[in-house]
Length: 381
Image (cartoon, rainbow, N blue to C red; front, side, top):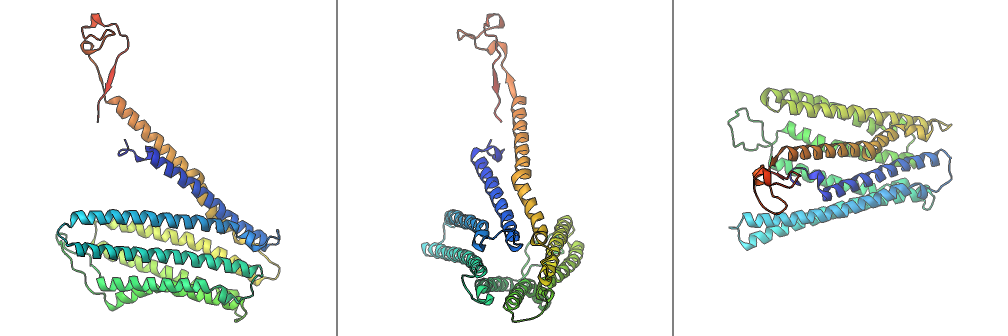
């Protein structure tokens, strides 16, 4: 039954229940944090910013636990991959297997160190902001943003590494001949390389520019308006819109060559456009309200109003994790159990009267039967 209906497996059910429980707690904490921030920024409470950030630090703790668990599970999967490779490649020498195993371990260790370092930098950035807002430190905001700049430097190295790997491997064109089996990768053209570099570095450059402008504005190094300070965020929307236009053009060209995957490409493109529209609406409505608040002298609109788009998103996540997804899961599980029960009941065999067992253990004709219940035997699938 576990192969047919894995969601009926008690072990799987336990993991699913924990997922919904932890997801509900995290969604509630994420709703509490902007609520505390809005109450503190609007002067409704006099809490310190360290108290306001308690829900965020709890979320960080959950993220650290997930990071450690992911590291353990990946280590187990890598050990299984090593065993599979050993069984499949019996002709390889012992030195070659050891070299491959060491290379995998080094790669895995470097990936673990990178993830933990990124997490620590984000946590340090949060701690610096809380200490600066509470007046515990008097550093400039450029120094407070230093952990995030270091994180962006690590992201730059990761992006560059992926770009170099893509350039070395080349690209594979969509075959015009359906019978073609082996297609050799070709080097990237200058225009393709430029588009790939733009797609890889554009968002990173905008993030760096936004952080630098925010730090300079808060420190008083520049006197530009807040609308100009958030210019990289407005530019991001324009770049995403340009990317969608280019994706539509690429879809039309690919549809003429590869007609088999036309529906898949269309679905992916439609989903991307829908997500861009939703993200742009919530992001730029919130950004517009924030700019108006920062430029006004009467603290209008309130922080709670500015966070309305964020509250809508987090509220939908909370409803999905706490109510909608568990209900759908339970409904699917009950339906699956009902189908399996009907299947078992439909595949039963009535025992003939001549083969039924009597109370005294004898087999015989119907006139010698003393048992009044009919025995059935389920037929194995």
